[in-house]
Image 1: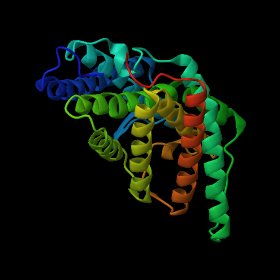
Image 2: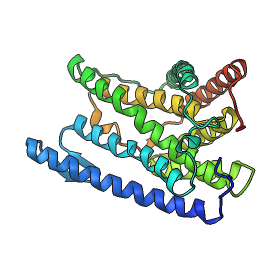
Image 3: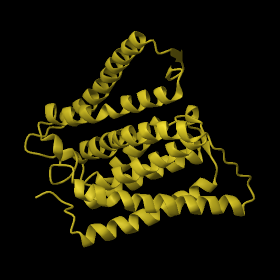
Image 4: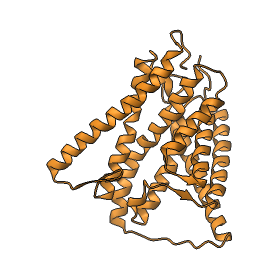
Length: 285
């Protein structure tokens, strides 16, 4: 989509720099505005690591907002630097295909549930101890309200950056998308703080999302899986009253790989099946 009539070798490079700088500026501005409002409202803040607020729910909401701000930055970069319609970063039809996106959401939920079941079964068979806690209905519902409202934008923002901008920017140089898949997935993995099996998980997620974006002609399928995945993950943290750890990442158990492989396989099969039956447009015209 970036290989248009005015495309030049320097535009993807300049656009990438513009995107990074734009995101840093938007994060700074958002931080200043939120900080000012918090002080005016008497909300306690903390300068500790990446945390901003002492209240975990407020801190999670702020972190999600910062990441979500990448969406207008990507769209603005596409328009200002590459001189093309912002919607072309969403799909081959020049806009986000909402019907196809909403079709993919229950497919993503199916894949996540089956993958989680496979992971829990593997944990049980391996004899690992499993403990669950319940934090109470009030904090859970409050947290889920924030999660359902903001996580879709956070997840979509990451897809617009790593599967939208990166794949299309490098696609302007070469026809084979796999180098862009690898670069985008490496950047996606670096953004997260996982180690060990966690790195394999996020890198694999990036590869699958990039491949599905190309095969389905847009970001809808990757966004749907990313949103469902994150809502469920944040939901588990909200259920046990541990929102403090919702954004903390590190090592994941090897059983996660089993659930991940199952999740990816199920989602790939059902998405490609529905895309074919729905005659989803996969190339620009």
